[in-house]
Length: 239
Image (cartoon, rainbow, N blue to C red):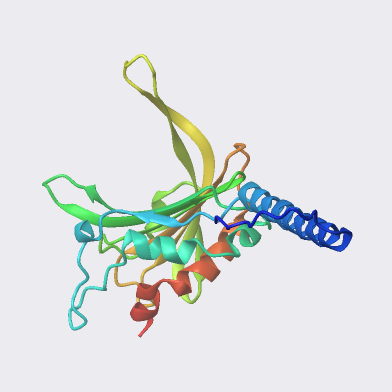
């Protein structure tokens, strides 16, 4: 901001000089404080916000009067999963998520049929959590018998089973050659029925550690019990 200054042959008095000095000190102090606050804000990581696919590409929800359950979107799953206390539920309070995303994907089957499979993922330095829904029409009860170490559970009054899984490691080459895939780190997964009647389909919560150690089952269960009831379609299926 520019200001007009009138010339004067009279030098400023001592009080004027003192007042000017106090003003300058105040401005400098305010400037340093503002710079310090800005620097602290820049150095403090912000929580990740959910990124999602184009909503127009999301699978449509069934009508309320239809027999099939309403379908959750990847964005809806991410909104439920990316909660402020998620790190605490995992046993690592204070961690800030590096990324959070949702996707409206599907699983292709032989014969050209696709099964809706929306997913969400929140990634920390220590843990990664994946939440998905599978609309395959198969009940959860008894499905765990096909897995070697599956343990039958009841979660929030619904059939469930706990089992081991493994991530997939994908490496990319900067020289343009084909990427390579291989086994990743061990994961623990919890599959829970979409509704209390177990009429078909499931929610799946999967956790794994970035250091390759086996995830904590108690942490996985805490996440499932806190997150799943906040998914809109969970409450709708309970009615």
